[in-house]
Structures are given as structure tokens and as C-alpha cells.
Amino acid sequence: MKSTITNIRKALVFSLFTLTLAGTSLVSLANNGNEGKKGSAGSTSANTADLKYLVDKDGAYLFNVVYNNISNSRFSVVILDAEGNQLFQSQYSDKKFDRKFKLAQPEEFGRLTFIIRNLADNTVQSFEVDANSRLVEDVEVKEIK
Amino acid sequence: MIVFNVAYANPDGNKFQVLVKDQDGTQLYQNIFSDRAFYRQFRLPRADRDRLVFIIRNGKDADVVKTFEVNVNSRVTQEVSVRKF
Image: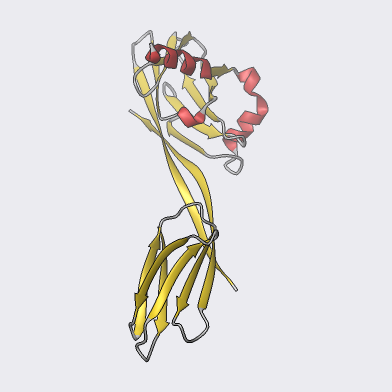
């Protein structure tokens, strides 16, 4: 029961950013290292997928999935949490797939798995995103005279 | 833990008292020594105390009082890695 509630909550947390909604500001965020942290894995060459994470100035995490679907095949995007629960699943056929997924509650973010499956040739490309939180304490001791 | 190194020159070897108090005057530590070249490390848990007072009292001279202000700034950092497999 608790697990079901957690799954529903996490699923609600995820919202798909369409290219239109993401707009120019997110594209500029992705291209400008000074405005936010970012990291990626994969390549942007043909037939390959790429995943980048971005942190906007409000601390929200955005995951940018790019898939060069040169054969125009149908493919699925699945997002799983650390326990393997499915947070998101959808199918597309965009030739140049480029969408952003937003994690609204970054404090709950531990591990995510993104799976892109080409339904024509059944090839799978997967990405694992890990987040580790650390508490940092700066202690300053000053003598009062 | 916050570590304070306390050194006190006591060439005559007389007894002296070391006291540690917090900002409310609550005594955190007290002991009597007679070391000629006193040197001890005091490890205090980092709590919400914002002031610590070290007092050395030998009963003859004026107390040696050292007051320290402690400020702690906490923040959470998150490291994210993306791996393709």
C-alpha cells in the first residue's frame, strides 16, 4: 500500500516538458555551463541516445533525452526509480527526439534509469542517473577579545 | 567535534583550575591541574552553542578568560552522475 502511494506520488512528480514548453531558456541553459550544473553520457551521433541532466537556478532537475531516430521507427522511453518502479512510459516516432523531463522534488531523487527501446529492431539504450547528497558544515571559531 | 588546544605556562607548578562554560554560563568542564607546561586538547561536540568560554584560575592572579564564538553554516550538496550502459 505504502509502495503504491509512493509510486503514484513519484509518477505525479514527473512531468514531461515538451520542446515547445521548454523553450529557448532551457536550450540556453543546456548550452551555458555558467547558469547551472550539467552532465551527460552518450553521444549525439546517428542511432544513439543521449541523456543530460541540468539544474536550473531554482535547483530543479531537468533530464534532457535526445534520440536520433534516423529510421523514423517507433521507440519507447521508460523511466524507472531505484526500486525498479516505472515512473514514466511513452512511445514516440520523432525523427529528432529531444525532450526534457522535470523532477519536481530533487530531495527524493536517488537513482533513476532511463531506457530507450527501438521497437523496430528492439535495440535498447539505458542510462543510470545517481545522486548522492552530503551534508556539509562550515564551522567558524573566532576569539572574542 | 571542535578541538581547542589549551596551553598554560605554570613554571611554579602551582595548582590551577580549568573551566569551560557555554554562553548560558553552564559549566561544561572543570578540572584541577598542576602541570608546569600545561597542554591539553579539549574536544567539544559541535552543538548549537554559539559561545564557549575557557577560564584558567590559579587563585593568585586574575583569571585568564578566553571567549570564542562558534558559527556553523550547514548546507546540503548533491552530486549527480550519468552513466550509459
